[in-house]
Image (cartoon, one colour):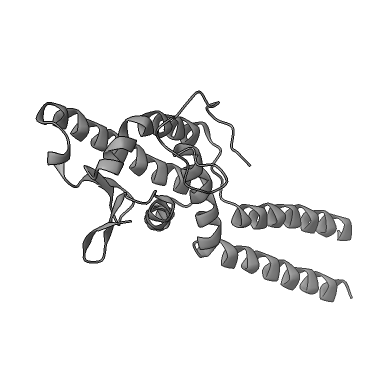
Length: 67
Length: 138
């Protein structure tokens, strides 16, 4: 009884760990795109994901993301 | 013994939850990344007219390059080259910092490729970028 419990837990653990490894081995392309968009919008000071007029980089607060 | 195992399982599942969260969103809020963003944001005001004039453009590898130096007066070309070099240094560091902040330095190239596409996608019309066959006006 105890042995089967331990074996079961061990198998479950192995499944959980392998799932983690699977998630982390591959490059998270969607998350990277999201992160890139956020950073680009901050660096170029784009509003609402649209092309902002670049002539007046005015006195916008430095680090606050628009959304 | 059983209690010990259950406790162990709980700890493991907590870590697993962290890993899943990390996979869903990339970590981009480190001091190094913030500093690079601020530096690039400050430089963008100077670069912006050069993008519009076609003097510089976005490369397909997520950097910028001088496309047509004759679009700026001779006396300003040195400064333009300096701006481009400084911007590219920041960009290279940004890609590296994002990869290391997420515990995967080997992702640097993938991150750079992702940014390459997104910079071009978000560029203003009239700016130049490198397509498969050379410079293209957006």
